[in-house]
Image (cartoon, rainbow, N blue to C red; front, side):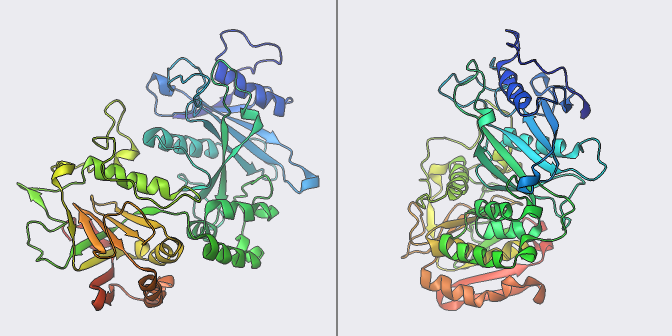
Length: 477
């Protein structure tokens, strides 16, 4: 639990006491420089610190009142600053001390700007809870929130269309670059959280988050140059300025999409062998236990999703023979990164004993939400020489679509359907992708068709079904 309380007296502009934690020294000092009239801001603090066994990674979230800039059409707002993702103490209590050549903790802190409501005398505390949730994700997954990351917010507060969607921009900010040298001389980045509407989030998925953030900067009521979130905003940027949709469409056509994969309700069947076959991809068993993804396969899928987020990177699937022997680091607590590892008691088959199989015919199954992303996968990823992965949220199944330009895939043009345990790869040529986009056009308007819905390409020996969610509740579907 957290409590809102006045922050402890901020240090004066005079030299800090020698025992004042150097990371706090740097951030507090810069906040004091930015807000000299607010030496003692309201602060949300973790009652039991993370390094004492508490659940909240952020020690503090400071909340400042910013008067904005009328000349720049920037409204008055509340400015939230996190303390805890970087190394505040430099003594290994939370983050490993890396010295002057390494990052300070995770290398960034979070900030958020929320438009101040008329008559509001104190900042709402829900943004601090949101920042704690994002910090938990970072600590549990060991993942940085890379530039223009996308996520769903948690809590009661929601944006203008009732969906707590967020975009995050990581940018170099000078006021985190002056951390005390005792912690680290390298700069710390500030991750700016921005609230968006559903249509804007979908546009970011179809294109990329950075492009949408730049559009938000051009619309004062939707963020403006300082990316200020207005929870009462009633229109999307596309309703405010319809021409912005043209810029998104052109961007998708030119750049493709940076979304490389999703967790989804999905499954696949090998139609080239009987379902009861002991080597069927979904039911390979040792004794009575279903096969699980090996640690190496799990790590490769993770790397697939990570690399797909890298802008302008060459599309490469990491080799199966990675350095790590398994997907878990036994020196840390279980993390979200480990979510690819099943919680069940299913047997893990050693990676070396799982052979890659070429399949003659496959049947892909998705729920409606996942199926609606297939056009994005085809148009925004494969037509741009990239890959896209669906990772099942109900089991160890994974489906990766790859184009002919992706290196390191075990699916080839000669054998376009290949499986490594429960991980299926499908290689699609550009010609076939164009045809699929025509045949799957109604997926862009899923409300207009009834489930189940089936698409089939007999000459390619490929079938795709869009099924109700309930079908995926049974792991043996």
